[in-house]
Length: 83
Image (cartoon, rainbow, N blue to C red):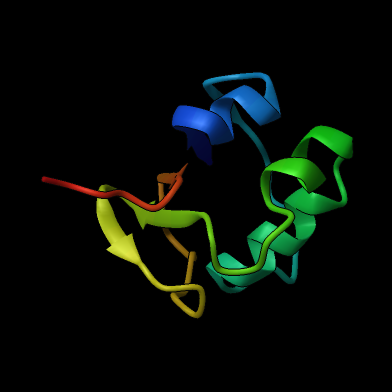
C-alpha cells in the first residue's frame, strides 16, 4: 500500500511517500495511525494529536473508522482552511 504525506505531516515524518506492507489486523484508518505512531519518533510526532491529521483513501476523504481493506493509497494531511 502506498502512503502519502502532505504539508507539515510530510515534514514531521521526513518523507513525502512510502510503500509498505501492512501487518495483519489493521482494519481502519485509526488502526493504521496507531500502528504508524509505533514506527518511530517522527511518526509519533506527526500523529501525536488524535483526530487532527486527516486521511483520504484512494483520494476520497475518510473518517478514522473507515475500512482500509483494498485501498491502494492512503494520504495523510493536516486540517485545511480556505478563504
